[in-house]
Image (cartoon, rainbow, N blue to C red; front, side, top):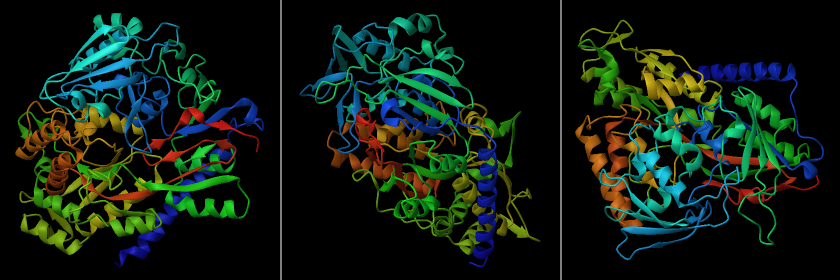
Length: 574
């Protein structure tokens, strides 16, 4: 395409400008860096891209909050990222009844909360009560709701939890990996109706009572989060030694990815997830003995990176007047045209430096059973896109495209700031759509502001957004279900707004009831087909994922599904 050479130049200018800006900021600031005694201090230095929105795990909807609280709380079971199977967590073992309608979890007897109180079955029952409370908004409830019913649970004794299911529910052992909350701290607050205002980011870290491998000691907004090892953590190594082996962690808040890269190059952080354009330079620094690090490919992104148009009638209809954008964004021909304007090859070549692949299905091909390999991609085809628009009455007159009622096609496009890859993808998309006579106002937003628009004000038109993916598709029920709070194009629907959304709801129920994974797969394949056909999300690309870390950090084992045995990490002498 003729625009490619011009586009390449524009994107290079954008990237360089951001990099020089980050370098100037970096050079003008004093920052803490790991000392030369890593082996003695055993402090891991990492980065997070934005401030948390909450420290309350039940209320989390964003990745930063999840990352910053993940080491504070444990769940009944955890995912083994090598086998992708559930393994023991707070529950040391479990028994499934022959009819698969009840599961008994046997809890560890040696787990204590940070304040020294024992963790018991009552904490598990309390956590379930909070999740199922309709007054507590959360993303967990859809994944553990079966035929519109909650899981009934009882505690025969302090260390046994029995869950009774309305019917067999295959995802349970994955979906039950939820953080268990301390009833002796939070139950009175919940009963008083104040749970939703508990453990906000203004909470003193010493009030966050968890049971995980680390406890938080300090948080300064926009700067840093610090942790110390939980000396009473239940897990031991093969010799009975204390875990985790690290003594603490320091996480710096760095919204700009270029600044994060510079921190890694200068030794200020110990681990890094390199972007595509950084992989080769890092490999060369290893080859030339400039950096004592490892650079390793770990797989294809397990998540989904997509454009989505807002279909929320409650937002676009005011005082009986409907904004014409709603008609466009729910018009299948308009959406098909938009899908045919995603230049995935240019995005892979220019943004991901060839280290990526077109994304067609919502579920990543890393998910070997549940990924649908049979979908036909929407090829990049500006002429076909123009023909689709013309056939639907969106005519081009003097370089301006209007809808059948004469309204100019114009909308806002946004993504989160500080992410050059998404910025470049939006720039490509904006340029191509403007060749069709569509005016696109590109306005990236700070991440927390963007999340507020998605789950509170719903004031957005088109967004480039990425969601993480899991092994168990039903764990994405808060996204797939019409009633889900992360069903972003039209969330929290009282009843399904369209027949195809109602069909997805039904398929989720049917898929969750089938215990054989191979027999479950067709239900999730069908869901991916519906999303592909109805285009509430327009898939873009999946990058190849790499990990990099200092060689002095031992037992650091990144896998595409997460870190393997993170408690075993430790620093050895350089």
